[in-house]
Length: 400
Image (cartoon, rainbow, N blue to C red; front, side, top):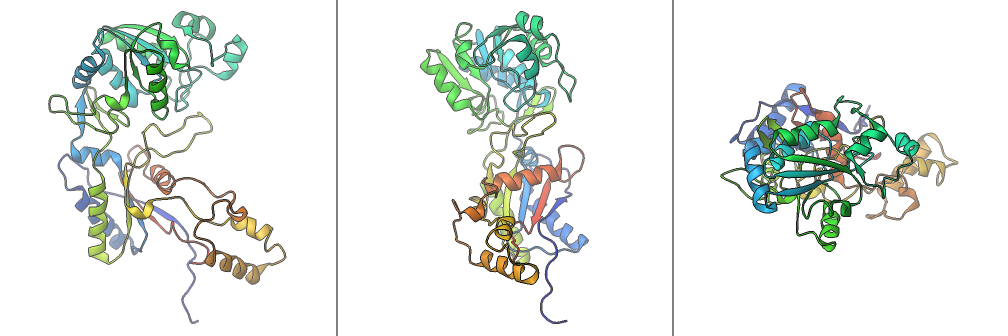
């Protein structure tokens, strides 16, 4: 047999085990070293355009980017006055938001908590649409008090956590020394009869929500990305995202989304180049951008999938749909002739296939969102111990 053998494997995603990362660790050295050791032990080679992805949690941990509940309270009090605060559109999460709410409630005398319904922004359900239909409620216009909500819908526990988040958040606010009042609405204007100092906690719609409230006469409006966007008493901070993307660390401490990650990804890229001569791409990733069809939960509770990445990951895929070519352009071919015709189409494809019929059905999303989602699913969120993911062959096509 002569010539180079065909590769029989396309994209491969590997979780890379690393030491436990602590504040102050040289993360670039640890990540590059862990990938190189894995390649040696497992018997694979790095290639140009491989992707090394690092989960945001270990980046933030190495940076020491933490804040306490008390520091959140101080920031909320300073920015929103410390009296009655309307807190609107939070997600329903013990890990993501409950500890933030403790800090917010500690900086106010009263919290008017406005929950979106039937679910929060990322799909956590308060009440089913079927129950809303049966009750004759219009979620686009109707504002419900807590009493009305209980009368119509009773107690609704989250399908996966078993938590009644309405009761949980109400008790949490009270335990922090603030008076709670809970209403249910989807129009941000609904909070204005209750409060004119407002903290809007939505993630991906936050700019629009804040604009609407200010146009309608709210005195002070802060989005969650404006809380802890600067240090408070020596705390961590995130100047771009504030509390967005944060996670519970301890009962009194929150890990923020990492900041200033571009130097890290460039450092890792350079270390791999020096060690192997291969030009890899590197990114930091958080939540993937995908939806669970059973629980209806959209995973992306972070403000972005990737806060930093090397330049080779800019853009969207530029791919042809093989089944379109097989069913249309080359419907009369089969076997080796079909393979060669499709391969030739790929080799000659335009640099930008946007609008081409032959690219219909390919995924029109940013590369970092697609690869970050793959990495999030690979690394998981529990005890796998693989905060680094190596993706190989992602940029290959049928001709490689």
